[in-house]
Length: 58
Image (cartoon, rainbow, N blue to C red; front, side):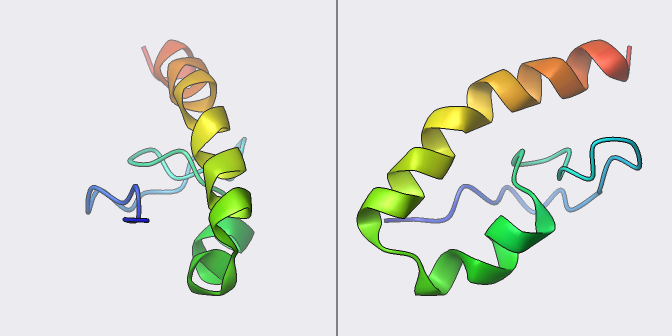
């Protein structure tokens, strides 16, 4: 599975989520060692996270 990284690596100071992909630092650092199911679970949460980040940063 391809990483959701879009090379916009900026952490939101409040949520500590990447503003580009929506992952946490732990998820980013553990990505290569995750199973496909774990990666799917992370990816499933990203749209909601990115939407929340967009609302906060308006």
